[in-house]
Image (cartoon, rainbow, N blue to C red; front, side):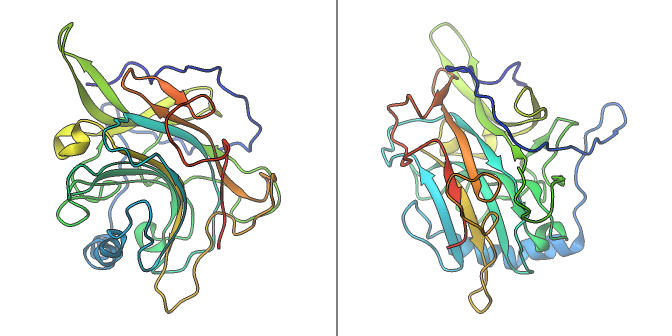
Length: 309
C-alpha cells in the first residue's frame, strides 16, 4: 500500500545551511517510471566481484571489521527485543577518489539479526566505478534476506525493489562539485520507513519498507519506491538494529580509497563529511530525535564525522 505521508515529526524541523542539490529531471511517458539500465559489465561484476566482497562483509556484526572494509559508524544498542521501524538522517554528499575494485559510501541501514540469516536494507550515496561505470556519486540501495548468499543486490540489478517515483530513482547521479573545495556541500535526506497497516481496531501489521528523499532542501519529500515485506523474513516485521555511517571497500594489495572527503577539520562542514539530524522511527510511526530519545544509540552528538583513517 502506497503511504499517504511520512512518519510524524516529534520536534520542530531544524533549519540548515548547505549547498543545493540539483536533480536532473527525468521526463517519462505517462504511466512509466525511470529505471537505470543494467550493463553486461555490471551484471558480471554482481556475479563475481560483488559476491567476493559481500562474503567478507558477513563478518561485520556491529563490532568486527571484515577484511577489505573500513567503517566509521554508529548503531543502536544490541537489545534484540527492541523493534525499530525506520530511520532518517542528512548525509553530506562528496565525491571521494575511488578506483576500480573499490567503493566509498555514506549509508543508513536497517537490519534484523533474530535468525542466522541476515535481513538488511541499506540506502545512501556511493562512488563505485564497477557498479555505476564512472567515478561520480550516485544514490544507491541494497538489500538481502539471506546474508548476501541467496538473495539481494544493489539497486534494481535483481528483482526486489519496486520503483514508483519519477523525481528520483536508485542509481541516479547526484550532481555536486566533484572534489573538495572548501565550500558548503549539499546533503541528501533519505527516509527509510515501514508502513503501518491497520487491519482492525485491535490488530495491526507492518507493511513494506519505503524509501523517500528530500527534493527541496528538506522542505518536502518524494517517494522513490519500496522493498516488499514479502521478500524478507525477520525484516518483514521490524528491524533490530539501525545504523548510520561511512564505509569503504578495497583489495588489500592497493591503497584504500577516501571515506567522505578524505579531510577532517573539527566543526567545519565545508571540509569534513558528516551525517546529521539523525532520527529513528518507533512503533507509532513517529520520528524519534536522538537528542531526546531514551533509545541506546552509540553517538555523542547529533553529528557523525566520516573521514579516512
